[in-house]
Length: 127
Image 1 (cartoon, rainbow, N blue to C red):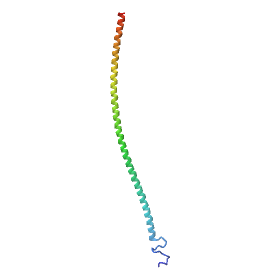
Image 2: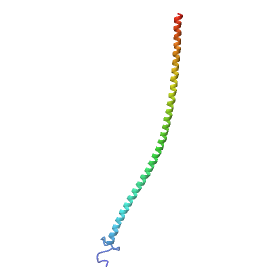
Image 3: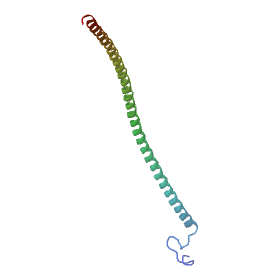
Image 4: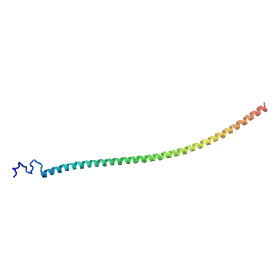
């Protein structure tokens, strides 16, 4: 028996890969490849999860910035409306002042005309 074909160890391995032992080696290589594939897929999924989490944070920040910009746009719009109202009020006041100055100008011209006429009257009749 045991010593005819050469020396065999207790497990029956004679140094050559045959039959069942070859299938086990193939299975181990296949399992190692599958394990490596699963690890790489796991890492890829973790990277995708991290990226999605980061994107969620970025979109949250973007949402906050858009809300703040919206509030600023409303304030700017209100300030523009207030400025337009102030300009309209200033224009009204300037028109009132212009009318007042124009009336005063006519009054001054009338008074000046009366004074000139008195001066001419006194020069012609009194002198």
